[in-house]
Image: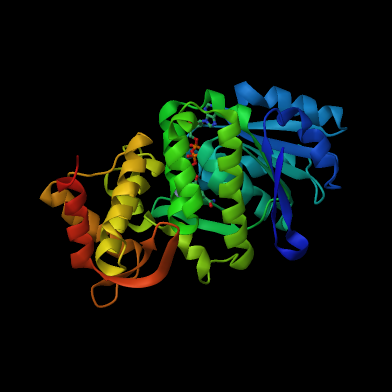
Length: 366
Ligand SMILES: NC(=O)c1ccc[n+]([C@@H]2O[C@H](COP(=O)([O-])OP(=O)(O)OC[C@H]3O[C@@H](n4cnc5c(N)ncnc54)[C@H](O)[C@@H]3O)[C@@H](O)[C@H]2O)c1
Ligand SMILES: [Zn+2]
């Protein structure tokens, strides 16, 4: 088992990464000195697979748990589901020292974390991420929240979990497309922070695609280390944490205009990172060979590297970006790569350049 610490003073916590960890969840929770009662929040795909084992482990450790199952998918990240979770926590008489376990992907983690952050002004919560994206990204760092009709993640909080337990075995049942989408965030860590990780991914991509446990353990642990380091230095995104948004400005806009659901988040930010790399080649001297290596790695991960937009879609995308981000003098703040493993943030990029970069991803397709 690998252990990564998120250093946040008296709110520090551990991320446990390895195989066969779920049966030990109860014992790990005992170390946190919480109350006996807890709620497991999970979704309709994950609960049938793993909830029983989790409940058994908690029971063995002396906890009294009950399960709340929410619908699978982004729609569960809503105030309506939050309300229904509150009602069930109250019905089961959860108290200040009770806790919540988020068992599932990023949707369940963001939802359950928000419920825990606000129920009785905050009760403890534990993340048990079961998607690759959640294990390397969303379960670490304390951003929790839900969507409004007006947009994604508009209601939320910074609220850190007390423990993150990544059981790599849970990834075995993840659909291939969801798994590949998680790889987009993995590759991101190589680009923004760690040239050695990027090289390792170039070497290990075939094994990673086969979900080889040893490779996964190394890679998930390294990604968590990077996220922990960034969050430890800038918990509430005053500066450095912005680097985690590499490729996300364009990615989010693409998700918004194509209707959430056409592209998975990881697919949208794959295209977003390629476009950001194109811009970096012009604005921050990213060498052409690095640009090629980045494109190649996303392609080998089975992720989309280009987007062929109709003129009207292209216009919509540019507009969505302007709505989402503060534009001043026709410019948006971007995270740009100087070389693989090193980025700069807060760089102003003109809408014209962004538009050109998007076109380039389409023409360079092959
Ligand atoms: N808080 C953060 O810092 C942060 C960061 C990135 C993304 N997010 C959020 O995360 C969400 C996306 O997370 P996601 O990609 O994990 O999606 P998800 O939670 O919707 O999971 C993807 C799908 O896989 C299913 N699933 C999950 N684990 C499974 C398993 N082990 N076996 C079989 N099926 C499984 C789920 O039921 C779902 O259908 C978005 O809402 C996004 O906003 C948050
Ligand atoms: Zn992301």
